[in-house]
Length: 66
Image (cartoon, rainbow, N blue to C red):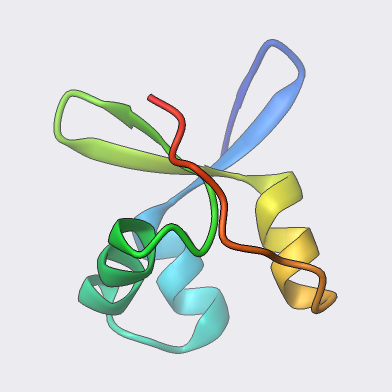
């Protein structure tokens, strides 16, 4: 997890481990806008708040932030 401007972000690998799925599954979810992400060069970072919403069953499809 990285923290930028008081907001925490997970890497694709960290999210995949949390949900016990392959990294490619998380990348597909990002393409389908299941939760927002920030892309820096060739890496995606997912906000901690988005993961918390998803875990709590409150996630809606959102637009991807870049």
